[in-house]
Length: 482
Image (cartoon, helix red, strand yellow):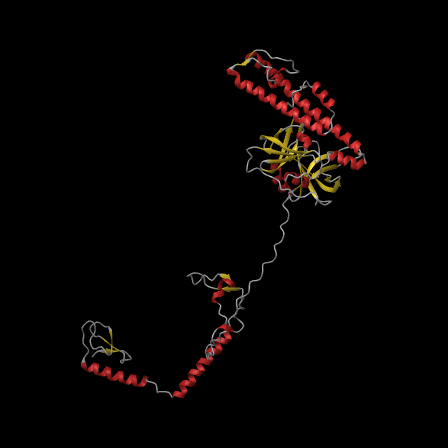
């Protein structure tokens, strides 16, 4: 007899291996077969159990009521759990999945998902939803992007940054009459004062880093005290200054004067615009920024970094303290464009002096002549020093390289270089380089004298005065302009 469990309808115990075998299986896995009598008993027990467990069928009306109650209960629970908890949807910021990662719910602006938003007003009507659980709110239209707020003006750069940016464009001008300042407005163009270049046709430009270059005096306007210089083989990366307007400057406006006062290169002085004065067709910017000898020709810049004037004079006396002037840059802009804004033969200094003292035109002429005479004497004195140096080189050249004699009488014997029949001798072929160098220096001196003569003539310096200056410096030669 096989051992049965407490519920024989479910299994019987194999007498051979002790396993539990389902009641409907008559053979154990070990091969032990169920006794036929035991099998009949198990089947009878199974029928009885099934009959007891089978529930009585319920009526259809009861089933419908139970289903409705179940749905109502679930809907009520769902409504209670979600009421007051759903976060308000921000139409401009919606969490949408990005990429394939279901956890990557970065927030993107509403315009990025505009294509996914469906406007219910443009869609066909959908069948009404009868479920008490699912409630679909109307679609929220995409937010219209608001126009960007107006840009806020960026405050001006720090003063030291303005100066640092401007300083590489400011240079020192060295000529036979002394030194002054200038500034690049183009990689090959420099502005400075006429009284800085004097009568020279070429000057030396010394940059901030000490590198020098030769510049040609291209244009001069004595009535403006403005000179335009040109440099060959200009550096395309050369820093330049922007030109503003001196006529539009306002009293109280902050300004800086850059230059090389008293030979001290890369110097800055600071002040304000004291006044903008119109004197005889000339616009002068008056400032209390210190302008000392050597500042002449340098830029007067505004807080924006733009040039509003060219420093030209400063008055230092017991009765005039902190009184400096710059020629409005507007005159220089016209000059660069090939226009002359004034036709007078006066200078800014004379024009201002006349306005301050009420001098007559004859007095103005005398002032101009005196200033021209002073510049002429300084220029000729400098050229005379170069001539003295050339005297020694000429003696060496004549002794070692020239075979013959010099015909004629000259204040300096090398003046014979420009006389066709003054040197009938022969220059040694091995000394051609030395001869060309002597000739080049002599030609430079000649060009300087000719330019100084023309400047002095325009300033009404008397011919007798000019001749005396040449004679005193041993440069009296009738062939200068030949």
